[in-house]
Image (cartoon, rainbow, N blue to C red; front, side, top):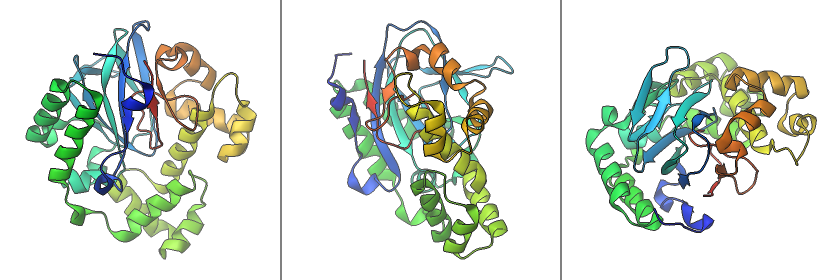
Length: 294
C-alpha cells in the first residue's frame, strides 16, 4: 500500500450521508509490537472494512477469536480486544446510532454490546464493500466506493422516531453533560419514558450514553504533555479525578496511564489522531473528526 499524506486518509462522506455517517478514516499501521489493541466505547457505532488481512477480535473471558472482513459493532459499555501482529489496514466508517435503520432496516438496539460480520446482515453489501475497497489503488477511490454503496442502499424514511433522534442529538451536543431531567423536559416526555424509548432504540440507557460520551471526550484529551487528569475531569463534567478514573476503569478495564503505556498503537504514534484532540484508537466508535497517520 502506497504512502499517503495524512489529510488524504480522512474524508467526509457524501452530504446526503452526513446525518448518519461521520468521517471515513483510512489507517495503515505497521512497525508496532504485536499485541492487543483496545477498542473503546463511545457515542458512535463502528463500521470497518479491512484491507488485506481481516481484523481479529478476541474475547478476554472465553479466549474465543473471530476474524472480520467487514465489521459492524454496536454501542457498548466495555472495551473490545483487537489482536494484531504489528500491522493493520482498513477504513473506519463512523456510524451514528441512526445509521443501521436507514442502511440495513435494523435499529441500533439489534447491534448493542456485540460485533457483527456485516455478511450476517447483508451479504451482498459486505461482499461489494470489501471487494471494491481492496481492489481500489488509492484512498480516494476507496472512499468513493463506500459513498456509492451507501448512497445506493440508503432509506431516509427509516429513521427513528423524531423524539428519540432529537434526544440523542441533544445529549451528544452536550458531550454527555446535559442532565437527564432537562433532556426529558426538552423532549416533552417523563424521565422514565425517555429512558425506556432510548434503551429500546439504542440498547443503552440515557445515563449510560452520557457516561460514554463524557468518557470519549476525556480519553481524547489524555496525553502526557497535555492537561492533567484533574483538569480533564473538570472540563468533561466529572465530579473529580477519582470519578474520571472510576469511569475509565469501568469502561476499559484499565487506568488512563496504563492504557497509554500498554497499548502500542495509542502510545507509539501510529494511531488515529483527532484533528481537535490528541489520541485516537482503531475500532473505538468515535464520532468526532479524525486523522490517521502512518
